Amino acid sequence: MVIAGANRHDLKLARSTLAAIGVPRPVPTPEQPQGLCLDKGYDYDEVRDLAKAFQFTAHIRARGEEAEAIKKEAGFKARRWVVERTHSWLNRFRRILIRWEKRTDTYLAMLHLACGIITWRATGLLG
Image (tube, rainbow, N blue to C red):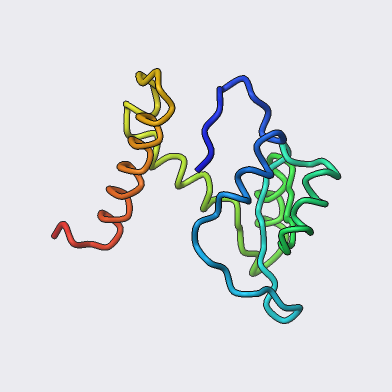
């Protein structure tokens, strides 16, 4: 995770976000490429070059473009909903939605705790 102020453009955090991926990835191949789904806020050549440098296939869609494709193309698989769903889950934690912490390290700790709780809930171990 990368933390910055709300007034910072997404483009400025793209490199540090990709560099902060903590899970080892398999090497992408032409048969099994790894996609990077982004919205219109990342529609810049710099981000496309960055995705190529990190060996991702960039999927950058404008707002509403994916919904149109779902209606028109049979069997089209939406990708962006995964990100929006995850943001929705994080927004259910009021302490993250309304940032009370002044220090970055305590806010990052709350983000990690929220992600841990979300993962725990998704495993179905709650009953």
